[in-house]
Length: 536
Image 1 (cartoon, helix red, strand yellow):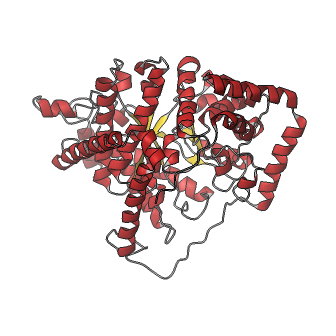
Image 2: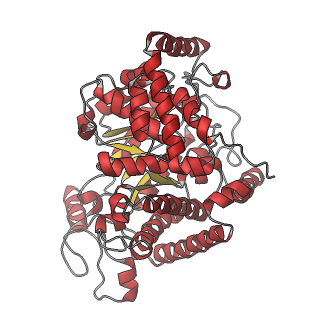
Image 3: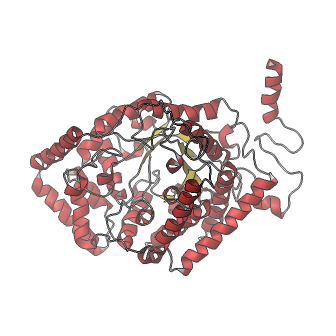
């Protein structure tokens, strides 16, 4: 048996007919079809962006973590890093994501509920306490409407612990356009929101070139009920809007395309998901290289951050979610992603428990180190079914992108409510399929039981933790240099009126202890606040 294992493992990387040292299948001859697929590490990157894929380097494992307080979040992050995680992702609470301070009346009952409240640099400093930022592969956060504030908070918060921004790397979500149709954490009208996001891209190109300033997000599109095709098409349509604005400012495509990411979901239809990731890389290549004229091969290769689809997890028989998450993670890895976050099995009920987060991380580690899936690049490449499905998804995505253009492009589609209506229709069809049993969800609409013996130790914000956070931000306002803060906010209003990049002013304001809500209020004085359409 031991000898058989050795032979099996050796054969995965053996050199012989139709195989090379990089551990992926080769065809005996080249033709147009083969060139369209390519080899791993070669344009158009259908089969992956690195020649040896995970034989060269594993994907970055970084769980999404945010508890009711900065201190509790710090404890969770440090625990995950000690358990072998290479990066971390900060889950912000909804008031923070919406540019509201914890003592705002609209924040009542939401402070620390779905993530950590970050009102000012004081909170970020506590969150980063004792973490060796120079030894973390990647730091992420869900900041979209407040992308520039996230930059400022990380820069200033890290400086307080003796780190320069050059010592670590932050990957910012910073895709506000999908917020208007899929999540709802917006502040300013779409045109101003687009400008604010591209301020980050422009600033990072010049001042923080090793940071990753934007993700073109399909994940939240999918989590709102869309199809896989809509997920990609809308993400790419929004991506083009950001690219066009950056080019309008005088940036070159190669200044930033190499540092942008696609953020996609992994659902349970394994072959569709694998084909989706492969199609996404090919579409990215053609978009960036052929349409925008990028000459840097690093710009042509789509880097993909994937999160297993939280919306597919069930509150009923929640331990079944462990299996769902594992299969979704397998699809992501077979699809060749660069960064992976796995959901926790109790997310449909509460903020993840320590146990659930640990199981989630271990799921990735078992996949990476025990299954052998990393030994061959793109192991499904060449399968008639997978290649045909990849082609089919690519064609459908390009066709849907053309429909978005017919509706005036992403900004017009947001303002008219058309694109939101498309997602509503898709979500209704999905919900109806689950309701009628046309789509099976084990333990929910098929193979159901009446007994559930799972108990949870809830990790929710409380009235007490919310009160403490409110007191904290009010004490900050009382103890800081109020005149200095006022000058910083006046500068921000001037920058907004004049069309100047707002990042330097935002960083200055955060450094002088302005709060997230105060910065957003100052900019809203000039740009206004978004009011969504009421299309039904």
